[in-house]
Length: 119
Image (cartoon, rainbow, N blue to C red; front, top):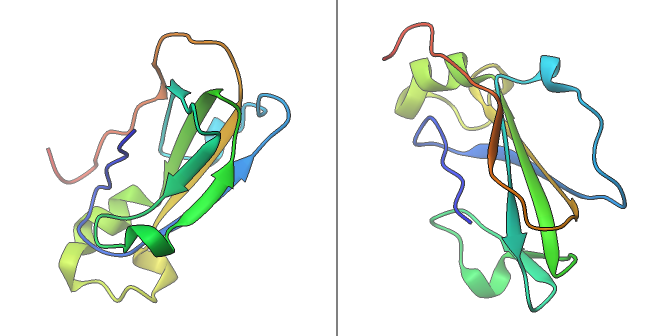
């Protein structure tokens, strides 16, 4: 599964492996999607496109998982793009990845972000 970002810069990522489906807290985020993922090894690797795979974060997850990705601060991140300081919270793109056990089901867009300044 690949998850894109809105800007070409550092992104703050938080991963949560849950026992149950998460609550609906979409109001806190700009964009929220979810989909099923088959993980036969039970090990999920989370890494950016420039990360070194042997050093990437790994998480124990169920063989069939549901993954919800919620993103926030997207307008600020996309407007600053490469000009942004990766240590500046005001222009950082935030991503939360939640994973829990669930049977295979269709991908969903739960909340769609529409950029205020870029089409």
